[in-house]
Image (cartoon, rainbow, N blue to C red; front, side, top):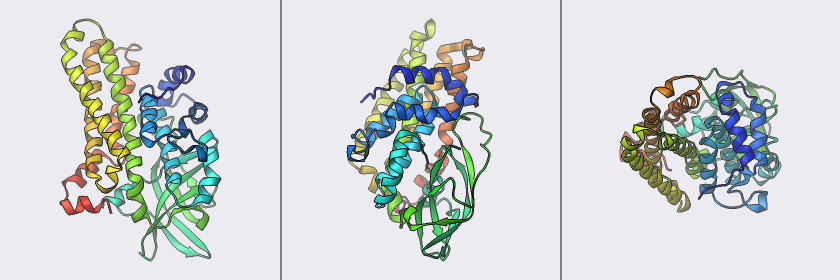
Length: 362
């Protein structure tokens, strides 16, 4: 179902997509603009300040933004996914305290659970540990890659292992916590306007009031469909735009590429439907493998779509300034396979023993 974005935001994104990608645009302006369009409230119950609806509608909104700027879509995904974490948390106090500012864009939400998703799939140990300290904990560790770490203020979700090996929890850490250090932005090839950096933790105090869920192993499978489903919105939006650009090219390419463009568009529509249906029916909570496979197929469609755009554009795509938008989409497409969990990581889980794949849903 198409989500109306508004002409003002669309025009701003079109004018700033290159700057958000190469870092020339001020990233501080992005989050408030997305919030002003009401995007963060899509799929959020009205009782909690949102517009109602479901997660599938938020996926569509991320796709609409990503079709104009994947950097903007990436930030949108981070903010909306963090909001989803709070919606699915039993910690009502934390939700009530943070959600209003998240919906207005006054506060950034960072989904620092990439390590946790790899941990859940048996690919990596948790990188943050908690030792008891008074009524709470003392945290040490590192998050090497986190997006939406807005210098104006953020909360970052983190999966944390108990130092005694008794399990793990998920908590929200504020940017102004003593002992929490945000590095300079990472030197990315693109998407440089996304406030992506690393976080170091040295003796950071964690209060029970900031725990999203005390049992990560139980909670992460519950939120993983939204985490990955919303992430798929980026692939859908980028593929749509590349297919649109290829279809609109004139000349001999229009007829030669008509069939492959039609076939790829049909494949994309089928994957979109499978994602919507699976999210609405909650199929992916008990059976994550189909969602992993869907994410892989969408990444393949993105690669094919930008390839068709290149063929339809011909040499024009390799000239400046005519090919600048295509060059940005080509770089954006190169990012899709490495978003955590990466395609290699997903394929490794799917290639494991059937009981291991089933186990990553537990």
